[in-house]
Length: 208
Image (cartoon, rainbow, N blue to C red):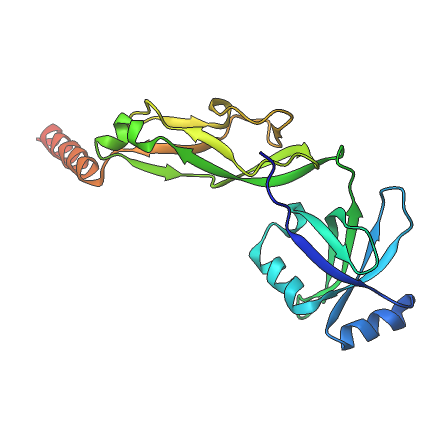
């Protein structure tokens, strides 16, 4: 199931050049440009506070947005660059690229874990340790999954779950080629402590 694409609101920037960009910043906006997709470049302004909030939330450069501009048709875009003030590190300009539904794009997708009760390791008190709550995937812009699902059925203490163990939605592939770890089921803390104590006693006995 495709996930809901967040909206990114903007207004058309009247005028071009540095003067118009400076005026936008004085008005509390961040100037930007939308290009690609077989259409003419469109100068826009983005609300500074809302943009900063999204930037601080992370993954801005790998999130697909539904750009909404008054008087324009909605279009899907991805950020291809954020210029920042060298002193304050605040955004001063944004480059957005239009995408077709058939375009491929790298995005971070949330990982959901299901059937914990069907995992013997967890029923025994094991702890699910999530190494990657999100995974970067290469997907079609028109079919971004809401999440990928990891089925924990039958998983035991000590099991390690790799990306290769997960059935990805059709058309999706990891951006990283290696078979990286997503999660593991570790032993209960009490059991680990007991094993550590046993190991210490064994070492002490060996010294004698």
